[in-house]
Image (cartoon, rainbow, N blue to C red; front, top):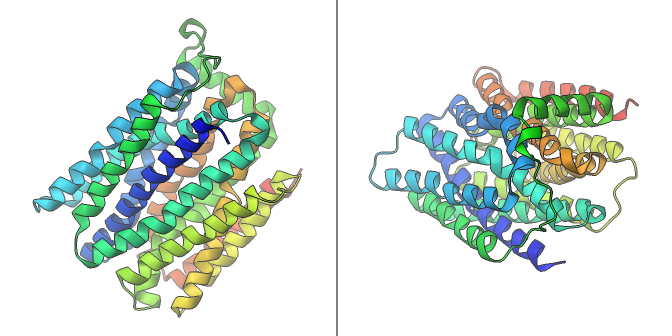
Length: 390
């Protein structure tokens, strides 16, 4: 494992620990004030919608400009939204409209941040180790997902939401320092000349590329379905904790951490054992595990079973997302990688806002006991077709 990747992984872990502290505090703050799954869905929509809005542009910029300089700028700007929320919360001026602004701003930065992190890993490590590297990245992300909510739960219990936001702002600083002074990317990475690389021509080239390679398109569509009909249902988790278990912030933080623990186990299973030779079959099995965990949430009445099903859900995430990512990067040519990864990011994080907004709206009008099984049935039906049909 080289120095560049170790520092990248450490910065990645610290920044996402802050992100999970921030997100856990923000979700519980909104639910505490509104008791509405719709507002939870709306917040998630505002956070992730920019990835759809800017997704095509980010792929263009990543394939055209210097990865290190672009990512360093994104990290610097990422300090501002949580810092602004922390200050507003501390002086008692944090309204939902301000939250919406800061969340949308952070979402615009994420539209660049997420695909850049994936592509920079392929800059740092050899392609034949990409699956393991992405799994280690996913492992660090999900250790952060386990630790972040625990830290947030401690501060939430003391009604110190502003501290959670400040910790998120601080978490980007080490990564910014590493990228600026210590992480070196190979000089041989090609930056395509502007005269041959206009935005519209690059977009047309990317669409033509995935049309020719339909197996890439099927995996991208399967990621969208996994997100819309699977991952998006987690926006209902505060509702399930409150209505199904009569629990509060402590139980919600434990459930979020359990998802993180499951994801850690899933990432370890990918890192230290062989993935199925047919990666699409591996992706299908991850869908089955997700469906099982989600269906369990619709029935759960005890904390033990809630945590067990959350563990399964987390396990499915890291057996699906990094495998889909590595499959797409390994199967596409290097000069297309930025745009293909941006398509992947849009199919996951770009679809997520529409999924959470829809699930949040439906959850406010339909019992989650009915809504979750309906979603699970659609998830399995569609992804059986896209992942198993040759």
